[in-house]
Length: 427
Image: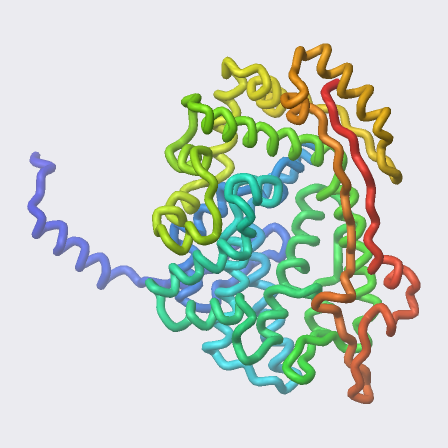
């Protein structure tokens, strides 16, 4: 029996399949946090299927936090699906309050939240400014959405306007990016679920039901004040317990300095192991204008994920360069640097003592010490009353800013940044 068929055969079979098999794009996805999530529009399915979005399956939401919380292995793909689900709930809630949102706007705002994290690179915030130079993930997300709009047309053009806050109804942007957006409502619950840190659990359903629109901007009805207070406190706790956990900070700074060492070695002519796209970024300093001038920059970025970094680190732990090999071996085997946290800055004498010890033990030059000694500040500001503040809508139609309306003194305190200092060094 022959298994070789003509091209015409494949055309006929393809045509037959397309006409006999239903092309249902309104799928249902089982999410561990919310249960069943429905894809409300066919274009949502098309964008989810795109390689740009599928890449988020290979970027972990919490970077290296799994080194502390073993369950924290969820991805940014999980997160954007959850945020889109909450966005649909928010749209329905606002419509019930008498504020019309067209089907076109619904599709666009769902696409905007679905794509809001598409510009994240490997290990997200840890390497955000090291893979590229001074280009935020929000800026890169805009480049991706603009590229997709060429392929998918009008809905993506409106989504880009909403994402960039140039659409004429600003509350749609505030649903995507503000201090009470669907991004934060999802990641707090989701990160809490996967890490096991219960302090992050928030009442997202009630918060969404309390959303309203006043003069074109997103507001929260006064009766939701206690829910939003809990939301802000949960955010503060999650930062200290998960996002800025001292062991996670130590691992992230090791990763940052491993990549910086690799870039330094590449610049000096060393041929390090790396995937083609990682090598592209190691060998040059990419800035925002490069994304605009050369389409291949975005293409290479779209091929980068956590696997590129981990694959390189596994190989680099055997590199002839002592600095690169030491840091990478520590990351692979979880032999992390010691880190100390203090409410006051570490004295110059204390830092000098550790520098002298590490320099002697590892036989390093003064310049090389910067790869082994890290001293910096951690800042936690749960609520920023100067930027996209949360406004409460009172029964009489007046508006007040949350920290001034709340009878919880903690809200005013949470608007003040808390700074802690750290010193990190080899054991």
